[in-house]
Image (cartoon, rainbow, N blue to C red):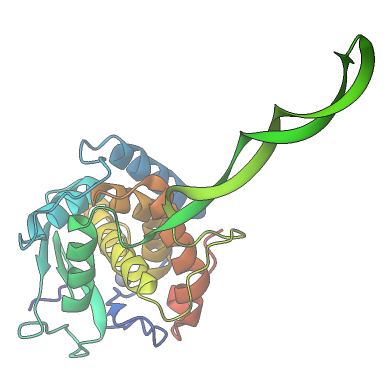
Length: 279
Ligand SMILES: [Zn+2]
C-alpha cells in the first residue's frame, strides 16, 4: 500500500473504540481563519447534496465504497477513491491494524474493516442504530359520568313532599399522559437520553469521523496545505454531521454523534496531535 506523504502516526483510542484513524504528519497547522472558511464551505456544499435523505441509502449487502467515495469527493473537491478493507487485506502503512483509516496523496482513502462495518450498518439501516425512542407528554381530557343524589319535591296525595332521587352528570377532567414520541439521537448533551460508555454508539461516531477526517486530508492534498492532524480532526468534526446526512442520517443525529466523539472519544487519545483545541 503506497503511503505517500501520509504518516504512520496512530490515533489510539479508548477501549470502546475499536480502531483509530491513521493520521498524516503535522509539520504545520493551517491558520485558524483558513480552517474555519474551509469547514464552512464544505459543510455548505454537503448540505446541498441530493443524498441528504433520511433513511436507508445502501441496499443490504451492497458495497459501500462508491457511496463513501462520493462523500469524500464532495468534501475534498477532487475525485476521491475510498477503499473499504476486510481484515484479510487491511494493512496500514505502519503495520498497526488498529487504525481507522489513512489517506494517500493525491486522492485515495483506505478505511479499516471495523469502521467500514459500522458505516455499512449505518448507511443501510432505517431507522439508524444511533436513534432512540423518545417520550412526549400530551394533554387531553377524559369525560366521566357520575351519579349523585338530588332532592326534588313531588305531590303525594295533594301535598308536596321531598324525595331523593339518583341522577347522572358528565364531568370533564384534564389529564396528561406520556406517549411514545418520534425517534431522537440516542445522546444529547444535557438531555435525558444518555448512551452508556462502551456502547455501540461510539463505533458509529468514530467511523463517521474517520471518513470526515481522511477526506479533509485529501482536501489538504489538493489545496497544498501541509498535512495537520489538528486540522483534519477539527475540520473533520465540522463536516462529520454532513457525512452522517449523506449516509441517510439526520443532521441532528450527525451533530449528536460529533458531540459524543468530541466529548467522549477524542479526549482519550494519547497523541496530543489529535486532542488540540479547535478554537
Ligand atoms: Zn489524519
